Image (cartoon, rainbow, N blue to C red; front, top):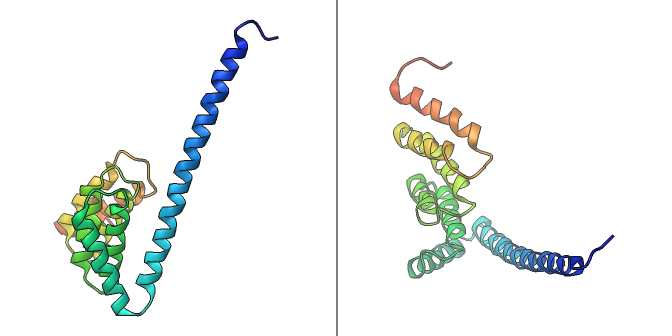
Length: 168
């Protein structure tokens, strides 16, 4: 039972839905391109050719220096953190992971970067810095899978750093 004017409302609703669908397709294409870039970078990092990893690392650092706020900068910092972690440079890896939250605070990778930086600080027995990062992660405004784990790690950092025996 359509009344006069309902056709226009239906047409407006249909065009709105179509615009949103086109926008979703554009976003999907951008995500797929970013995932392909991730796969290529991870493939280069995982290969044992240290020269290739060095080239990738230098290229990423140059790209970040020339354009530090690029949308793919967060992914580049994560890859650089992976490279440093694999080479045993844990402090450098923490620095790259922390740069994600500092320079790309609106990225979806911020919770993961805080988690990874915090766990590396725990491995380094830097309880105070670890507690700071886990606090930031536990209070992060985006929903993420690290919420309860961050609180548990925060308690462990407080316990290990204070020397008291309130957890067992």
